[in-house]
Image (cartoon, rainbow, N blue to C red; front, side, top):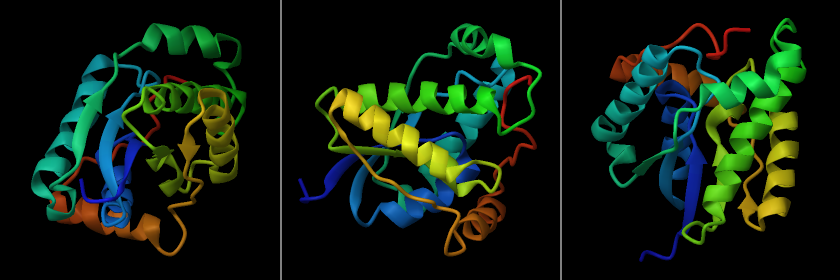
Length: 180
């Protein structure tokens, strides 16, 4: 190999993944991990996956990025957040959603193939990077794998993701994915 750490990068969508992959690819051997049980409609889930795969195939900075998909399991998500469905974005429902996705990513990373994991979700201004990093570190401890704490929206990361989305004509959704 090239001496780089192997990273499992939880990707919520192509637009968020764009900047994060561009930023991390020089330092890590990345596998884009698509696990998003929060996305309510299977058609929306597939549309976002297709855009992520298109980014990986078209962007030079993503040329060496592998792709791994976990099962689409919206039923588990719905059950986990059922008591919090009427809460606004940013509340307990989001915490449960973040935890569900980060724990699954940590579990996959700990399978022995990856040295470290993180998530693209912190690039979004709508997502709580502090909470995401707390939950990521907790999952890392539970599954005994390293977590990269980051707030990818900083240093114009979010703006760069918008630029890259325009450059590649990526579908930019208007909602996180859950019915909420």
